[in-house]
Amino acid sequence: MLVMNNKPENIQKESIIEYGLMSIEILKFSLNETENVDISIDKIGFELNLSGDFDETSSHIEVITDINIFKEKDKGRKRVAELKTKFVFFIKGADSLKEDGNETYLPKKLIDSFNLISVSTTRGILFTKFQGTKIQNIILPLISPKDLSLDLKINSKIIKKKKKA
Image (tube, rainbow, N blue to C red; front, side):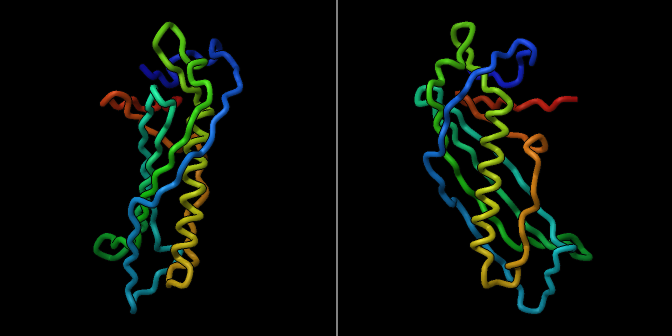
């Protein structure tokens, strides 16, 4: 069983957790350029969703980023681009994160690192994909890890990272 942020911070043990990035995959990319439409940065919006899967047996964490970029219009919005990526991380010595027999505690800083790496790398992929297009100057804004929420799926259950009030 995986538990995230359910332990009070004052009793979470400090430890060095080694992890690494195993793979990156582009799951989906689409670009909808319109010849006669002015796409300016002030009329562009971004939607970012993160989801994940933790395999306790292999100690692998999969993070999926799904970014939709849209142009604000008078009658709603029009999707300009979409990118969905998958990142697979490994945690070395994940057994050291187990407590109380079978609960694995993933520290908030670790989840924030996975989020930050995944979103930052996806920003670079978008930048590369947009080169030579009308939207080549559109860059995904910087996002603080504390503003990201990663849902991890464990044994067919969704465990949401809780934000501090």
